[in-house]
Image 1 (cartoon, rainbow, N blue to C red):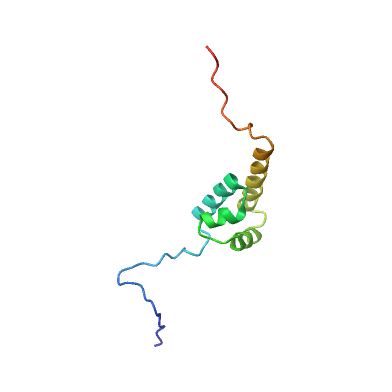
Image 2: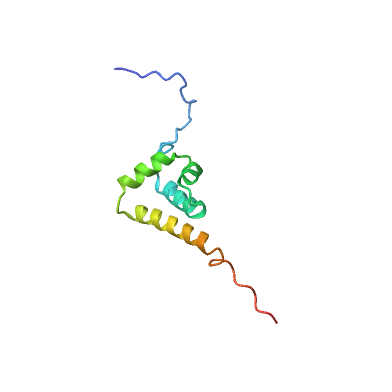
Length: 96
């Protein structure tokens, strides 16, 4: 039986994060929320510990899915907020 050698094995009892380098559903949700807030794929990807290239690969792989549509919608809403910065601002309280 062959054993693999790791120069830095994990400490006994330690668990490695299985999804550290994966686009989990939670990571996708956080990415989309960040994309909506910033309008910037690179910043949104970094916010969830991923790269922009990885995010674009994921979008291509999920072409036509809710994730893909949400990505487009997030960018559209961000652009709309730039065009009309007062559209989503709270309305002033009525005067008494």
